[in-house]
Image (tube, rainbow, N blue to C red):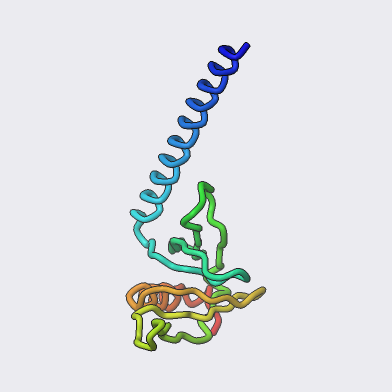
Length: 140
C-alpha cells in the first residue's frame, strides 16, 4: 500500500509541476504580447487597497487597462474615450521628497473618478490620444 501511495504522490507532484510551468509560460506570453502592442504603456491604477501594476492600451474608442499579475486575456478595466477627462496631474515624489518622473493623473469618466500613475512620456501620449479624438465624439 505504501508503494502505491508513493507512486500517486510522485504523479501528483509531476502534474503540479507541469501546471505551474504552463501557467508561468502563459503569464510570460500574455505579458510580452501586451507590452509589444502599438499603443501600449506601463500604467498603474490606484485601487481601494493600493496601487495595481498594469499595462494600458489605446484602442479606437477605449483605453483598456490590463493587470500585470493576471492570466486574463481581457482587460480588467475599460475607459471610454468620449467620457474620459483628465482632472489634474501631479509629479509623484520619491520617499526622500525628490521628483520621480512619475505622474499621478486623476481622471474621470461619467461614472467614476480614478488615479493612474505613468511616466511623463506616457502622459504625453495619453493627452495626445484624448486631444486627437474626432470632434463629433468629444464634447468639451
